[in-house]
Amino acid sequence: MTMSERESLAAELRRVEVALQRAYAAMDGSAESRTRLATVKQEYRIAEAAALRALGAEDALRLVEANDSPCAHT
Image 1 (tube, one colour):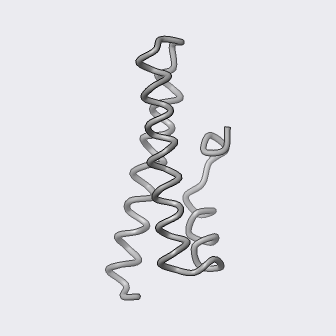
Image 2 (cartoon, helix red, strand yellow):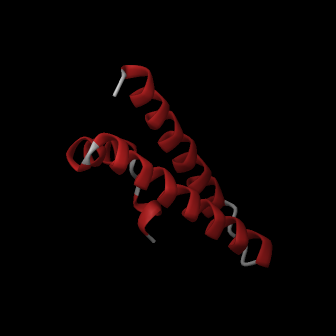
């Protein structure tokens, strides 16, 4: 895997992490906010799985933990 591919994976993980944090911050109990949170959680899982496949478990775990927050696992 090239460095640019690794950087692309890291950028996607950062993007979905920020989106997840924003979705939690915007939670107001409405159907729209719950739907947005569910959508962003799914995007996070997809990005995390892509990193696992591309990097292998050990490298991916380090990358995810470097970008991780408790919000991702609730």
